[in-house]
Image (tube, rainbow, N blue to C red; front, side, top):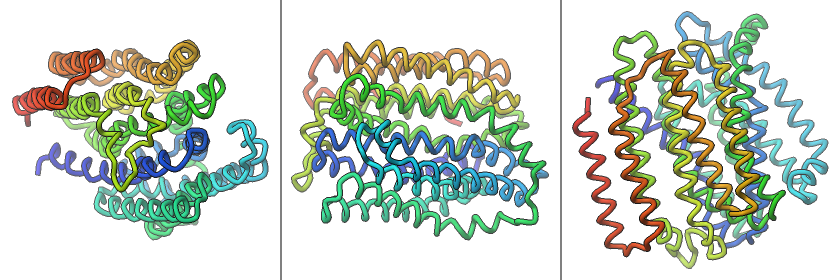
Length: 467
């Protein structure tokens, strides 16, 4: 099997696993939007936004350091893992302790209410995830894609089932959802524990090696924080400038739109170790060019499908439950805009080889800072006029603008001959469809015909440029 086909196979498996883990809240969306009020769902979204943001502080860039040095030839894997886990354990105890002690104040500040229980449960979720996420990286680095998928699926099943029981049967609302997530985190921790301890040897802890790892990780840390700011700050800006009901409507639409993020991050799980291992290959740039073309076309095909059919999709009714509750339908037009922003993010990730090969990871903070600054400014400017739609537009524009400086810098460090004429042509074709569908309410037959034409166009491009 060629390396490109092997990459495609592993990326597909990792993508399914990653999407499964992250898609629990997506799968539970019909349940929550049909049972919770807009205000309750808004609080739910804010709590999980808080968890996502704090995950960055629990890892402080050591994820990237673990991946880079674990796959590097000549490195002692036990020294790498033991040193990283020792540091993460120490910091996780401190941060979770602070969250637990000051849970009342934190909930009043971030959720505009006394929800200390939510913060305490969140601190436990974050603590267990410190170990499970890093061990899943090790499993990826060892190319154990099926093991990764198995653990991911078990976590999904446990989390989903506990949510159903606590939210539906016991009517526990947001706290039930948090306990469901905690259950999944604990079970995943138990499943990964054997692989965790296989890579730890307490006698091999090295403060010297930890300093090297931190020198690589800490410059990336601000970039990761800024990434989360771009992804999540709109929820809190909406809360401060409007109310929790608007946050609820926006978050439900954002959740559907984040399907594109699942695809992007699932791809990245295979992409990162793949391009790191290809650093010295003479055919790397041409292979990366083809991967970029295939991946971009795939994302655009998914996007146009949602552009044409999203209003019909969210109104599907199964066992008297809509895909999204009726109260949340008004935010449907936000979904394609969010998806477009994540397509830009997908291309941003494709530009990483030059940055990583040259060791100039400090630049990522600069580009992320630029994107976060644009995002916050646009949110402040657009939300008062366009409400939740303004937040979606701000997200898409900021991700798009962030690519420009990164492209020129990264491509000088490592040139990838992107097939711009094909990428831009297919993108512009998609934009014409998007604008037309916004202006005109196409009948279902016309939408299907348009999508078939777009899909066949993408298939022709891929066929003519296949390996």
